Image 1 (cartoon, helix red, strand yellow):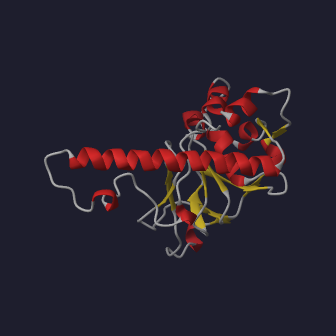
Image 2: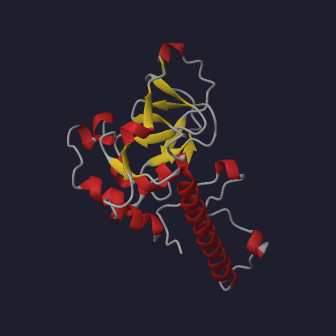
Length: 217
């Protein structure tokens, strides 16, 4: 598990504080100026960091702007893996989220995404998580955390390996589910083409990310 090893080798892999990699955005849209037409961030799923948009576009509070490639962090559930990448484009998020731009000269956004959602990283921050209202993670807590930061080429290679492994796992789960359905009581329609039950995206741009860092050869 290459990512796990990088997280463990604190003295061998160069590290950087998130404050050196991320820039907090504070582009506020006051509720009185919101036209009710923009796409709104609904939630970030814990299991895989997938970003969902809201069907209801109304709001009773101020919002903030996020653009394609931004790192989205739930203040309430950061410690549970509720961090995602904006793969949609312009989104408005409530102030329960933090919106970060990633310095792409130093870090690959999806690499940062995988690291801060990895079991090792989450276990580390859980022991140091601040209290307060619902244990919300504020920028001063998040930004002082450090992560291993190899060169961008190595980061990209790690991301490719992680997502390749995730694709294999997802494909195997789909086949297994289809076989179980086939062996069930009801006839299956379309066999491998059936079933969006695992909530597959329609395009690569909206593809959900791995729920954790899988084993990498």
